[in-house]
Amino acid sequence: MSAERAARVRKAVPAEESAPAEKSAPAKKVAPVKKTVAAKKAAPAKRVAPARKAASAKKSAPAKKSVAGKKAVSAEVSPARVAPAKPPRNESHTALVRRARRIDRELAEVYPYAHPELDFENPFQLVVATVLSAQTTDLRVNQTTPALFAKYPTPEDLAAANPEEVEEILRPTGFFRAKTKSVMGLSKALRDDFGGEVPGRLEDLVKLPGVGRKTAFVVLGNAFGRPGITVDTHFQRLVRRWEWTAEKEPDKIERAIGELFPKTDWTMLSHHVIFHGRRICHARKPACGACPIAPLCPAYGEGETDPEKAKKLLKYEKGGFPGQRLNPPQSYLDAGGIPAPPLGATASASPVPAASTSPATGSAAPAPGSPSRGTG
Image 1: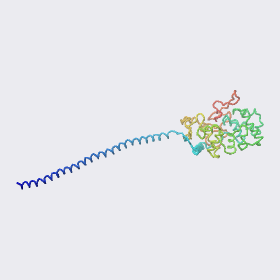
Image 2 (image 1 turned 30 degrees about the vertical axis):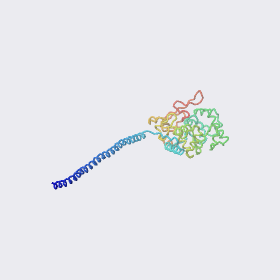
Image 3 (image 1 turned 90 degrees about the vertical axis):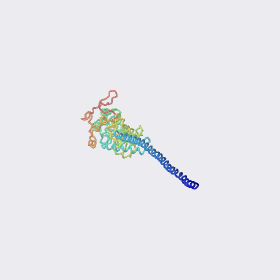
Image 4 (image 1 turned 120 degrees about the vertical axis):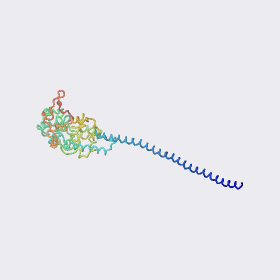
């Protein structure tokens, strides 16, 4: 029996040793299972993170598209209307010079035929006509001076004239008594101090009765070919609208604008600005909707912006009406300009009634429908 027991013990020992082996085998199998479970849990975690990023990306994408959409809409709207060219608040002098000269170039293309709108054949006629143009239109002066110069062709003739006869001729221009005194006074000065000739220097011209810097520059620029800036009511109005200067006194405006342009441009610059002020950029109702430089104008919108309504506000050749000169330059006629009618006559396109005399002042008052004073 001892031998049998010993054999059983030997068999039992391997059995005990194999048992742990059997137990350890499942343990090894369990370990991979745990790892796979962890792997499965980790996998969803990694998948969730991209999902959140994708969601945030999707949410941010529409926001960017909406901003771009707003920009696209504004870009489509802005070209449909004329945007005023507002200068920067702290515009440098260089930027102002460039802007001002660009406007002048545009006006030169619009009015290549710009010229002085007073009829004259010599410096004497021009200085007298310019003095007479105060407080009236160039048209009324041009309708009046033919009779004046026919009777008094030289300074000597006008200086020796009968004042009452001169007053009667000048009556249609308004303030005829004061104007008679001025033109007769400057004629006497020309006769006595300058040998009957109009001087070609600014310092001499301003010494003549009734002649200021504006009149002097008109004479210098158009009779002698010497540069000058004519600061009349139209010029003052437009340079302030364009924000070239904020000055209000003519002398200061002249200096400010003179700094923006070379001297060679001064005379034609004056013609361009005055032409535009008389035809389109009026004092009370600017024709903004028919203005060729509207995109460059900081004051766009002060007047009528509807194109059809604005066209009805255009004057002279731009509106198909006669100009201010009875004898305009050929370039003006070639551009479609119509000569003004003589005093008392009417033109086919627009009647020009003669002025009537105001009983209260004894001066000429514009008849209904005729050009008003100082707005020519």
